[in-house]
Amino acid sequence: MESNVIAKWETQMKKGTLDFIILLLLKKKDQYGYELLEQIKLASGYDISEGTIYPLLNRLKDDRFIESKWVEMETGMPRKYYSITNSGQTSLEKMTAFWATLSANLENLI
Image (cartoon, rainbow, N blue to C red; front, side):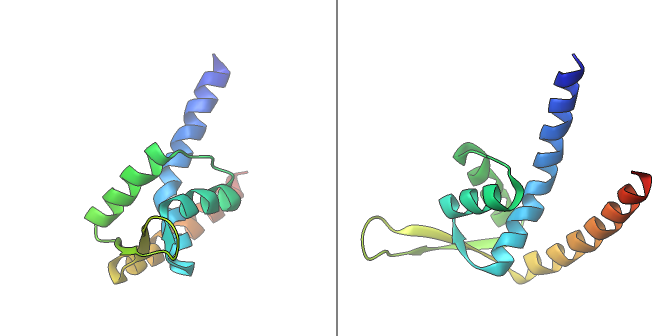
């Protein structure tokens, strides 16, 4: 029973940080969806699915934090690349400040 509660808590923590992680990654460089999946796993250890990432990307686009464009490839299908907007950058700065405060406060508790 306790392990189920902890697993649910961990899932909620991951969900709560994915927007932040995506914006941090896009601040470094424009990326396409599958590339973001790989980078999220490398950076955070979160193994998320395409069924999770694309709704998040669409919501971030609706919020005007990111934008996308199709890029033709030399071989294969075109890829949709995502980039952070000015509004996304401003929001990321606020998220980063909040995260720093939250992390410091939690570290004090631990």
